[in-house]
Image (cartoon, rainbow over all chains, first blue to last red; front, side):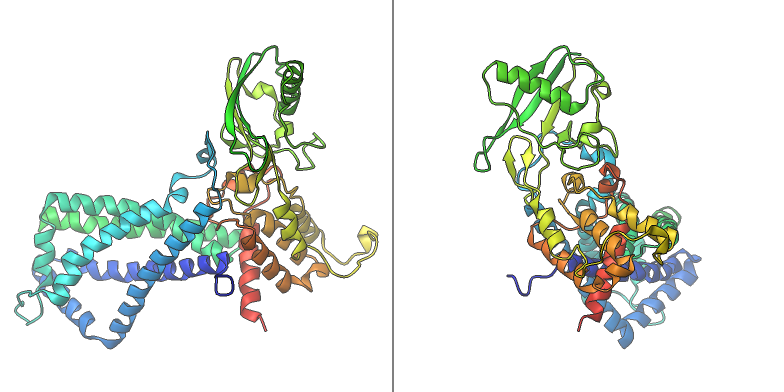
Length: 222
Length: 248
C-alpha cells in the first residue's frame, strides 16, 4: 500500500470517466434499438442488418472492448470506494436521521448499481451471448435473426416487467451519476452546474423512458 | 419542559461506550441546547456522578467548537445551525432526545460527546496557508481585488471547521472542509501562487487521515452552520485535476 495507493479524487475521476462513457454508449444503443419500433417488415430486416454491421466492424469492435473495460472498471472502482468509505466510520450512529438532508438515490448508488449489474448479466446472457456464441437462424438477407429473438423474449410478461423496473433503477442511477460525474471533474460555475442538472434530468428520463418503452411496445404490438 | 435523553457515555478513547438514559425536569424552552446539558450536568454532579463532557466555547455560533449528533442529525434538527444556537423550543415536552458524538474514524471520541478533530488541523497544516509573510491587514480600498472576488473568497473562508460535514456524510468525507480552504486561497492573488502544491498536499493529507470519498449527496451543505456551498467541492476537484495534469 502507500506508494501506489490512488487518491480518493483520482478514483472518483475514473468513476466519472467510465460512467460518462457508459452514458454516451446508452445514447448509441438506444438509437440503434429504436429501429425495433419501425413497421414489422422493415424493422425485421433493418435491425438484423444493423446488428450484422456492428458485429463486423473493427472500429465498433474496439469501442466494444472499451465498453467492457468501462463496465468492469466502474464496478471495481465502486467496490474499492465503498470499502474505503466503510472504513471511514467504524462505529455507526445509534439513531440516524441523516437521510432527511439528502436524496435517497444519491445515497444508494451502490444498490442501484447492483440492480443494473444483475440486469446486465441477464441482458448479456439473453442477447449478447446468444448472438455471439449461440446458433441463431438466418433471415432472408443471410443475417443472424436477432429481431425474432428480441420479439420472442419480449413476449414474456415477467421479462418485460423486470426490464421496466430495471430501467427505473437505471434512471435514478443516471440522475445522480451524470450530475455527480460533472462535479467530480470540476464543473464549478453555477450557470453550467444548473445547465448540467437540467440536461441530466432530460437525458436520464429520456434514455430510460426510451429503453423501457421498447419492450412494452414489442410485447403488446408485435 | 420535561425531557428524556439517551446520551453516549464513554470513559476514554479505549473504552467502548454505550447509550445511557437521563431525565431532566423544568427545562426552559428558551434555553440553548448546551444550557440544557449544563443543567443536566449540575444535576449529575449533585448526585455524585461524572459530568457529561462535551465541546463548546463561544456559544455564539461562530467558533465551531460545539458539535454533536442530536436525534440523528448533525447539530440537531435545524439546518445550518450550530448546537449552541439550537434552543429547547425546537423540541416538545416529553420528547426523548438521542445525543451522540460526531462519528468518523478520523475523529476519535475522547470522552462522551467530545471528539478529537485535530485531523482538520493537519489538513490545514498540509497547505492551508500562504508561505510568505503578507504583512498586516492593508487598507481594504488599496488592495487590487474586486469586491465580488473578495466576497467569494470570504464565503469560502467562513468555514468554522466544526466537522458537521464529516458527521453527516455517509462516507465521512472531509471534502467540504478541505475545498472551502482551497477555494478561499485560490481566489486571492496571495494564495494563487501555491495553488497547485496546496491542493495536492491537502488532498493527500485528507486521504491519510482516513476520511472517505465524496458521493456528492450534498448533505454537508444542508447541515453546514456557515452554509459553505458544495460548489467549492467542484472547484477543488477542478484545481486538483489541473494540478495533477500540470505536475512537473
